Length: 470
Image (tube, rainbow, N blue to C red; front, side, top):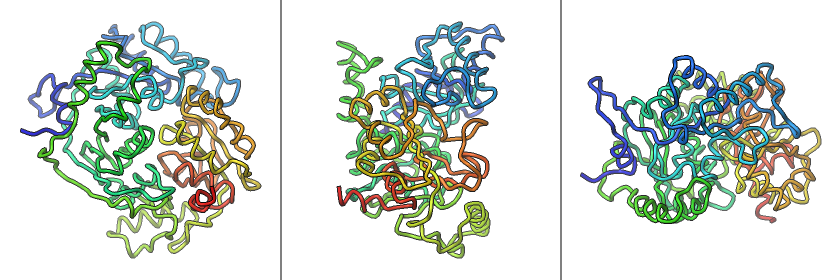
């Protein structure tokens, strides 16, 4: 029987079908961070169990660590220091690899794993973070788990899971100028709803996906979880191989040749079946911005907040009205021209070097509008160093952006740094839930280019008005 990419990975990692209908799956890599990793490591040690394969477990400081220059263990979050120091202690005791504060490899888990070649085509990778699906862009099966599941995976190198259904989302045609992977995924969720991918492993395919860079594919897969999917993935191709070759944890020499032969087999066969397929014309997508408090509250930048009567159900209308009340908006309000107070470029969605280049190309020679607090947080120390070699940091700073150390930063509020109540933030992150970036903060999601253009004008702005000039 013909197989999809996901089925090939699944079959290669299936340990046993269990009587209750679940499956025991072998796990190749485990990634931890200080917010939940310390809990899993402590619990494992207290139970008298050891990490089965320490060399396959990696941990970074990203969620709680501050991103201010000169940072240390002390954080804005009152209990942050405890998490950081506990993680450092437990990681050392367990013998796993830790990317600590001050390590030039430190950064957000889903940024540093691809850039060091930890995630590779055909492997299974888990992390106690919902956006682990990001790494499926490398042709892997990667998904988020809880801290107790992380403990089980470290002790046994296996996990018991339900097998997801299969969906293919095909983006056909070419993207227009100024349209990015972030716009693609927001368009998908806006069209099909935040639960549109529930229960599915989603393969992203089509010419528009094939034409994306690896960074773009990582952005696309990052928000599969916002579509409620089990994971998202893209079949590996020459771009994937070129990206991985020579990276720290990528195979070398003869091992590389053998790995490449296997990776080239990781494609969906032409007559393989999916449970569901969605086809989107890429040319229909424009720069996209969210207007409410769910990623499904998304519309093209030339559009307005939809009329509630256009929504399909009473529940949807009720949820939309609550979102509009929270956001201080009303049906019919235009998205372009909406005044913002803050601009944030960062997160595991859009803080890679390509994202920073995109924003810098618009910011160069320009200034952010008066009164706008603008922050740029690179996704890793390697991204930060690369940006500084190219002089991007100087462009951001000259424009009026704060230039930070790497980490999750203000992508989310967990008792640490945040934006103000009822302040409107245009953000490259992945969630716009109520109080996601601070108590009462109003978040709108967009691409780095849209955030940069909007920061300059002080209002939500179509980035194409700048890219056409540049």
